[in-house]
Image 1 (tube, one colour):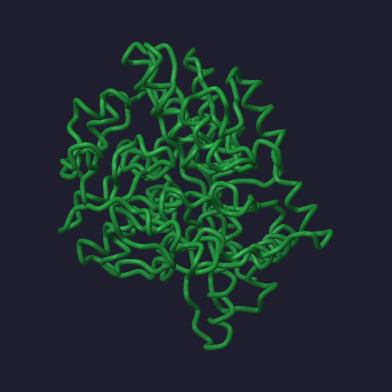
Image 2 (cartoon, helix red, strand yellow; image 1 turned 120 degrees about the horizontal axis):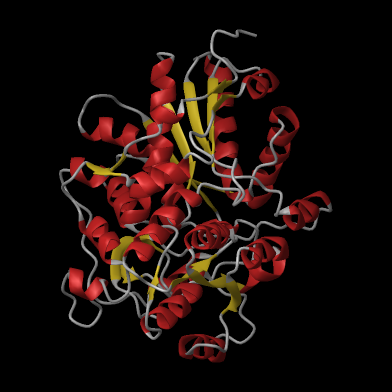
Length: 455
């Protein structure tokens, strides 16, 4: 086993990125703008500022600046857990007997257990700077809610979280971490909002969706003085903040003269995927290098692979702006599986545009196959991965086995978005053979897609 490259590549604190990278600046054709659902005209800064913090709106609308400086206060917070290690998966390579070289960027080395803290502290910082009292948000598997509650506690902000009901029930310990950090956590849909009551009346007994939770969080934000809504994925601003993942990954590889051939990330709304691939996609957009970039999503919620590229509501309650994205329809409610944070009906408009332009690929995988890959990874690499992260592990393993067949020594990089220690109910069901693979039928998807707004 060669040791010329260490198991863990660490950057120094001084090498934490000083600016976020904005992929849209290098895109010749920009993502389609958010539309006002009433006028069908592009959303203005004034309209968006009713919902979001003002400086975050500026970042959301910025298609021109490639680099946006990271405030010193945020960089100082990053130093608690960044730079995150880039790990050479020597043990996995040996297990697979592959000539491929496999690296993973590990984002689980903070209390929230995932990459979500990178954007949570940024959004909380701008809310505090604006003089707000608090923020509202939704969370799926709970990583985002956990990260935001931590950031808000650090800055002295109130935090109201609407958690998808199925995750609220499946992941009680993550819910309790949020409460430990002072957040209020409400299962969604709930009877505490007008939209929640409407959804409950239309879908009695529903297990909820991220689209439902977003609607409730937005309703509370716009009707509560001193509050704004913040989102953990999908939006351009979130992909921007998460670019620290990819920037550190690229810097670590460059330190040892390593060039990636394949970059793989799990895809739900796009935060981790967009952050991981950002500098690699930038080089690809500028014609400086080429990479295979693969998005991995669950077959139970296949936005990229079976969705439609169209304008759609970002939420089930249809109160948010319209975004042009790969979508399954805002009324689509996924099966109550354990993909957790990968259960959003749509995909980031930036990533959707890149996918539509054939700048990246997408594959969908079965839940049980994902957990088989997760279990193998845990046994050989010593980290228990989150179900979301394990989607990327599954396809990284598949690509490494292809290299074994062809004899090609490709370099594979994937994002390990977080740990799975709060996901033991899922692992229990997998081990007890109670986990199933639910794949929506064409008829189910069409029922939701037929309701897309006419834009």
